[in-house]
Length: 407
Image (cartoon, rainbow, N blue to C red):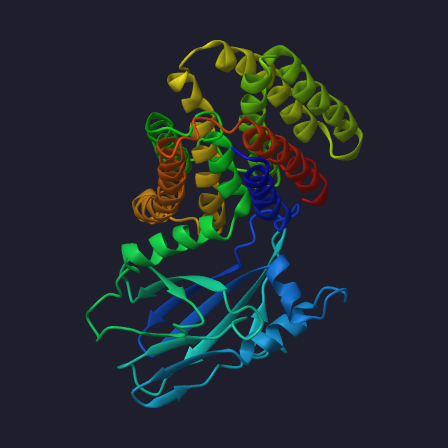
């Protein structure tokens, strides 16, 4: 490949990775639980502290509970066939919005609405949509003694009409959660950089199958672990690992190109161990132990992957780890609602299917482009691949370090 093309690919890698900086998962979410009994509607809102900060100017102190409650009261409503359902003053100086005991990282509020008649009830929720248009409120809705249904309030869907008396609300369709997964990947440039780094070695169809198969397996494992409750994912450690996986697969490309896998492994593991020692005094032993473990993993994985002529099976390992970590993200978001396994599994399957569709499309386009270049006579592009691998490895380490200290 000529020098000009190499520069363009290198700049593309910098653009993909650099615009994300050290930011981790940025999906804007809040939660609500609605219970309808006769003409009464009880609403409970769970607001993450990170989302509440959108109610104040950047750099200002965090909003108080009263500030959040006042905003909430003005952006949530219930109506019925008899007109608007007023919020009930709960007495004892509580007012219209009752502030519950806060959980770590969350504020919680309750509002009680009383309708003049029970038919034609509609829930209206515009919380944060004027501040963050992409915000999503994940709602659990129950009518009388029926089961809970999961729905989504968005800027385009601020109103949910409940079915007639005697019927139960339905869950949001598969498409709604698949679209969330689709947007999750398109908005997460570190995930796209992992795909690019994974395909740097050869970028052939068997690598595409390995990538898709490994990620699918990882998603399934994350769902199984999430619904079993065996592991509770900690996002402050999970998101930094996404940066490490970018660095790992990029380092694999560097190791193959330089034919010095042990030196590459020693460099990556040595830097990780140094960071582990530093974090022992600043973030405590969980983060330090995590980094020590991935340093050992690097020493084992990189030489083995580089020594195999066609290590397709071994390359399933980082792809599966990627799928598990990415799948844990949305599962951790939903853990706030304590969903039953039967309610949680279809949501996670739909979300992961949407995410996998984007990954397959991007990876398929890269493989097709590589095949076209080979057909046009560009059998290899060592300069471009080396530059891309070095850039992606550097940005992967940047994400790892930045997220550990920012989280």
